[in-house]
Length: 502
Image (cartoon, rainbow, N blue to C red; front, side, top):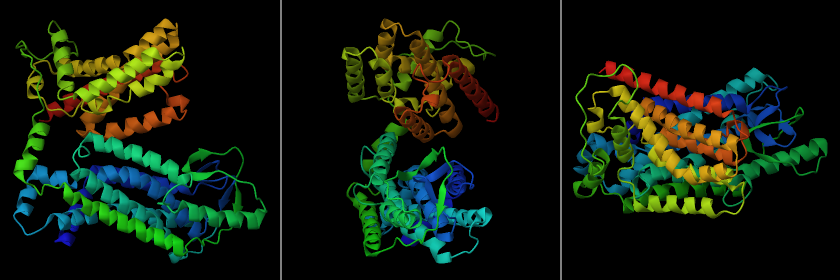
C-alpha cells in the first residue's frame, strides 16, 4: 500500500506545470554551478578559488546547489498531498481500507521524496553534461559524480519531503502560514548551516574542509576565505586547484543516517494530528475554505450591461468597499493586533530615518491577505455585471490594504519632507497588490506570490538596492508605478481571456 501511494503521488505530481517549472529551474541552476573559466560569477563560493571541473567537483558543487534550491522550491511542489486527497474525495475511499495513519503518511513521504529524487536525477545528468561541455577534465568517474547527489542532496530533500507531510497535518501550518514558516525556516537554516552551526544538513562543512586542505597544498594560502552556496560576482579571475574529492568519513555518513532517521520520524509524527479523513474533523476546515466568512453587509449591484473599460461608475466606492471587506474576511484579531503593534513602533521610533527601515516590516505583515487576490471565488462579486470594474475594484482594495498597513511610515516620510520616499511609497502601494493579483490570477494559487514576494522582501532586507522599490534609493518610482499599471492591465486581459473561454 505504501508503494502504491508513493507511485500514485509521483505520477500525479510529475504531470503538473509546477513540477516542470522547478525541474527546469534546477537544470538551469546546474548550468550556473559550473560557469565558464573566464566568468566572474559563481554559485559555490570558495574565496578566490575554484576546483577544476572533474567529476567529483562537478557533482559535488551541483549537488550542493540543488540541495539548497530544491529544499525550498521542492517543498511547495509536494506540500499538498494530503489536501489533494481531501479535496478530490480519494481520502474517503482510503478511509474505508485497513490503511492506518502512519503507513498512509509514510506513503505520502515516499511519494514526496520520489518527486524530489527525480529532480535530483535531472541535476546529476546536468552535471555530467556540463563537465563534458567545459572540457577541463573529460574523464568521467561515475562514483565521484553520483555520490554527492546520493549522500548530500537526497538526505536534505528527505527532510523537505517529511516537513511537507508534517506541515499538512499540524493545525495552523496547513494553510499559507505554513508556507511562510517554511520559507523563514529555510532562510534561517541555510544561513546558520553555511556559518557552520548545528547539524550539517548539506554536508558543506566536510566539503569545505577537504577543499581547504587542497587549496593550502596547491597554493600554500593559509588565509581564511569566504564560503557558501549562492550566486555572487568576483572582481578577479578565480584560481583553479585540483580537488581530490575526499570528504566522506565516518562522521559524514553518520550525519546522513541521522538526517534520514529524523525525516522518517517527522513524517510519521504527523499521525498525532492526522484526522484520517474523518468528516467530523475535516468538514469544518473544508467548509471554511470553500465558503469564507462573508462580511455583514448587504450587497446590491445595479443590473447594467458589461462595461467596455475598467471604470467603476457611480457604484464604484461601494464596490471597492465590498471588495476590501471580502479580502479581509476571516482575518483574526491577532492580525489586527500585530498591525497595531507595528504601527505603534513606527510612530514612536525616535529616528527620522526609521520610516524606510520599518516600511518593509509593515509591508510583509499582509502577505497572506495579498496572496488572496485573484484566487478567491466570491460568487456575489463575480455576478457583478461590470467585469472589468470588478477587476479594478479588487486591485484598489489591495491598494487600500497596502496603504492601511503602511500609513504610519508614510506620515513619517511626509513629516520629514522626503518627497522621493513618499513617491517610492506610493509606487510600492500600487505595485505589491498588482503583482499579487497577477500571480493569483495566472496560477489560481496563493503560493507563487507568497514565495516570490518573501524572497524579494528578503533580498531587500539584505541590501538589494536595485530591486528595493520601497526605498528612495531604489528604482525610479515612476518606473515602479508604470510596472504596477502594466501588471494590472495584464491581469485584466488574462481575466477577460479566461472569461471568454468559458
